[in-house]
Structures are given as C-alpha cells and as structure tokens.
Length: 166
Image (tube, rainbow, N blue to C red; front, side, top):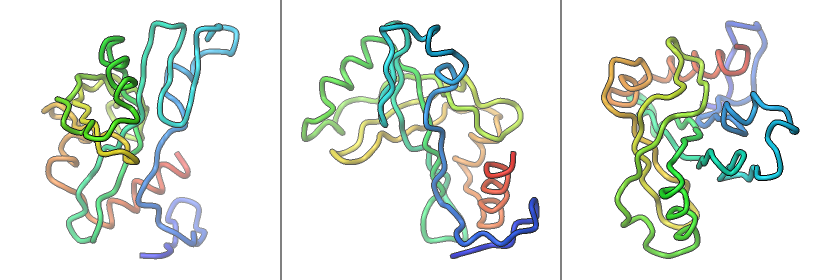
C-alpha cells in the first residue's frame, strides 16, 4: 500500500509507514541536558543515562494478517547493567543471535491505553546488521494481544494516524 487518505487530518499522505518508533527512551526525553549529566549518551541503537540506566533499541513486530510484512515498532527497552554490557560486548560479533534472550522493560510510550511504559519484555539479539527482536511478556495489554494475534492493514492505518497526529 503506497499512500492513504488520513481520517485525522483529512490530507493525503504519500506513504503508509510500516515501521515507526521513538528516537530516544522516554526517560531521556523527560530529562534536561543538565539532568542527564556527563555519564549519559544516546546513539541510534543504545542509550545510557547517568551511568545507571541502560537501553537498547529493538524491533517489536506485529504480524499483519492481510499484508505481506509485519508492522514494526522501534522500541527502547531498559536492560540491567550486566545484560547491557553483554549486549555491548557482542555488538559486532558474528553469531550473537545465539545468546539467550535478555529480560527488559519497555521504555517507549506508544499510542496505546493503558501506557506501554514498563511492560515486561524479552530481548533477543539478531544477526549483525539487524536490531534485536522485542517480545512482550504475556498480559492483557492491547499491544501484547496485537503482537500475539496480529493486526489488519486497517489497524496499521489507525496506528500510523495516531502516531502522526497523536
């Protein structure tokens, strides 16, 4: 599907994105530069805040029942320091995908009710060049249900509209 007529703004958008995400963890966005301090850093794939909070960016995939590819949320997940150091140690190594999954907490505020912040996750490293796969722990949260059961292209459009205009 290339473009769509947006029911929120009434405009035609040239593309229906199949991947959306936040450029930083929610905590990063809630702090001023001074509050982050010297022991903080943000890259396109990892984030450390105050040398105490550790995050990686991963792919939370929602199967699309009537589409060829999944819809992907790029999400930040907090890891323990030990897990973060292990992920970092293996970042450029072939075969890193054979590591067992890491426990984490979702730290991206996605357009869902209730909030998606602090949902339990499993983070599985992927082959070089691919971001880790994020799987939600079983719950009654709508995002977990969509990851488990899949969504339609109509729902993808709803998500995109909420993300673009929410």
